[in-house]
Image 1 (cartoon, rainbow, N blue to C red):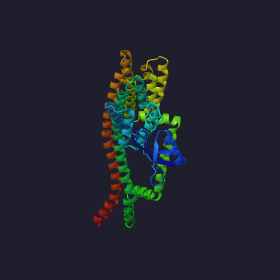
Image 2 (image 1 turned 90 degrees about the horizontal axis):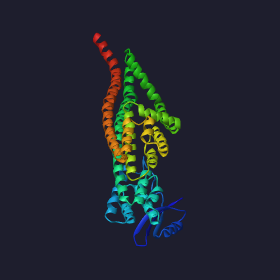
Image 3 (image 1 turned 45 degrees about the vertical axis):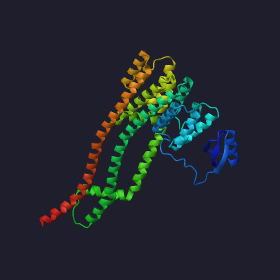
Length: 404
């Protein structure tokens, strides 16, 4: 279906711009008039002016949502009505996807829908947790408080993701550097010496012969290496999409050296932060657990929280299924149990979230401190072996000349 951009004015004379998918410009005009807008200009999008729906990773990041929540609170607390606040935020927001999302929310709100319902229609832009908090805020009359809490939550989430990214990107860069050096040595440097050694009447050491054979094979079959890498990545993705495969892989992620503790502590931090934020707004425990399953990626924690939800709905305290799951550390279910006994669950979970946020940062530093020397030593061993393999026949040749 073709897309059309439009310029229109509302009943108050304010200009509005946007994009609508329709069969014809007449259909766009009818839709705008139905929404109470008077079209000024309607243009069909062509190849040159069409929006490219290309995105890498998430369309809207936690940092963008945090800014959105902060702006909403600031503008509405200044006495600006919600519709005008959304209009102002549409003009100020830099993220393309979020900008379009706010514009669509504004359109739905002007039709008479609630803010939560309008946001729930765009799950790719506004996460379920934010929608639930907005709904709770609208019901209790504390919408500003809900947005304030979500701003803090998204800021914490952005910091957590940045910490985890730091722990993974740096080792990946070092590993890529190692692979790059090995590739240059085998594909370009070693072949030069192979041609040079072929003209010398010198007996090659076993190490040199081994390296030369590996280099010859790599030069002649480099495409096979690429195919194997692609096949491994494709196989991993296919296996991870199966239920059994995901269970196995996520279990390995929890138990693997160095990164296993980071996986567990990250899941605990997200669980505690999400539960605390939602429960502080009066959302029921089963609904909180349902939202938690959507923000945690590891399937073992998802399954544990789903079982916990079923138990809680039967009247069982949350701390008991958390302990029975055997995936949460003792700190989690002990703090949860204390919160249940004292009737101050959200505060206990907030402290638990702060604790695990700090633990994630400490673990990240430990992972980086351990990975860096390991990768450097590995690089030194591999490159050193290749250099020694090249030097050995040259040294043998000079020793032969000295004996003459």
